[in-house]
Image 1 (cartoon, rainbow, N blue to C red):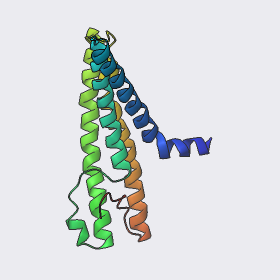
Image 2: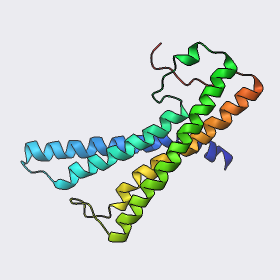
Image 3: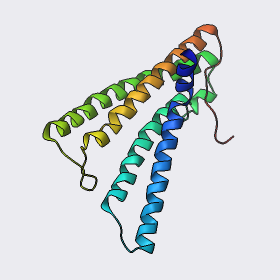
Image 4: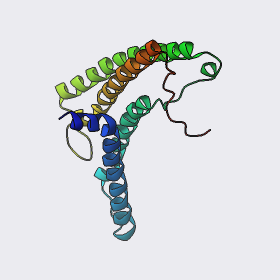
Length: 171
C-alpha cells in the first residue's frame, strides 16, 4: 500500500497531465478530420478541448510547485547563503499557500452557485460543475504540494542542507 501511495505521490500529476494531453490531441485530430474530410464539425469538440486545457493548466501548476519549476524571481537567492535561501523559499511557500487558500474558497463558491442553478455547458450539455471544479481541484493540488515543499524546506533548513532548487530547464 505504501508503494502505491509513494508512486501516486511521485507521478499523480504526470498521469493526469498525460490523460488530458491525449484527450486534447485525439479530440483535435477527430475534429480536424471531420472538418476537412467530411465538411462537418461539432460544437462538443471545441468545448472538450477547452475544458481539458483548463484542467491541464491547473494540474501543471501543481506539478510546477512540486518541482519548484514555477515562475519566480530568483536573482536574490543566488547571492544569499544557504539558510537565507531556505527562509526565502519557506516565505514564498507560505505566501503562495495563503493565496491558494483564498483561491480555493472563492472558486469553490462559484462551483456551488453553478450547482445550485443547474447550469450546463452549451455543446456537451452536461453540468458545468465538472469543469468549474478545475480551479478548486488545481489549487487543492497546489496546496498539497506546497505543504510538501514547506516540510521539505523546513527539514533542509534544520538539517543545514541546501534548499531544493528544483530542476533547471536551462543553465
